[in-house]
Image (cartoon, rainbow, N blue to C red; front, top):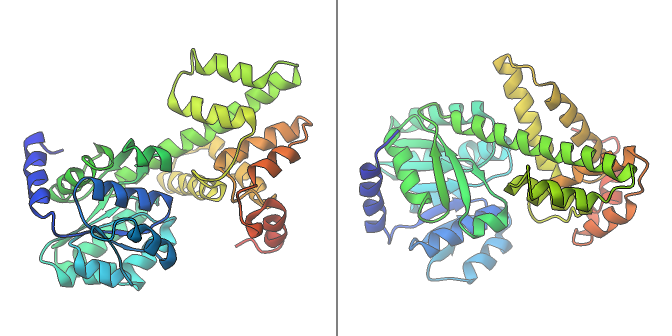
Length: 351
């Protein structure tokens, strides 16, 4: 989609603008690591999150390079390039429209780029790309760059970004900004939603991997075969890859401590997959099963656990008591997110 020479030239441009901060909106575990990686690559960052205490904590670690902003508008006024790392479509739309990101970028800069690293619907990205174009007369560009990584992998700059944009120059700029600091970029062309479609395909495959691991290891256990030994054999031979190894450990040992990707976000992503499939005329029967299984796990109050906790239902359906595993996995959660409290709160309150 763009040449290595073009990327190199834009990289030099970014380096020359080193005194100009990059905006990062959404300072959760992922956004924090993106911001820190940018700083390690030589950039200054201006950060905003509704949890201001957390942003202040991060900024205090490197006050000469990291600034805690008081609003989305403050970030957009100070930065011609802004990265958003937000949990869902609703929050992204709120930041872009209600909180003034698009309007401020359009008015404050001759050229600006909004890089969305969130996992959202491709239709949301297409709409936001048009909104940036309309508000700015073409000077403000939108780039979809959803990220494959858990927080620990992102901290090690081992992320993969599936990128797309209606503007090739903006996409090359975003690549030159993200690749040296956070990980590898995979370009997917000029449809602003293409990167999001790719991300949803990947997350769907991870979710179904968790499910297949859960069912297979439940079968092994029910026949008296050590589930961890089965996982070790399979992930050292025919399934020797990152996803099977990482989730194989969690599923086989029933280790679902939070800190990576919450189960409630898994439900969100599978719902996005099915919505996109429906609008595209694609039948995904496994997707419907996955949504039901995530919904059942949410009803049991497991929303705050790692999304690998989806696997617990296979053991429960085989007659295994998983209460101790749940208790152990939930140790680090605040009281209101512990499964019993969360389940009680959800009864009659589905939205």
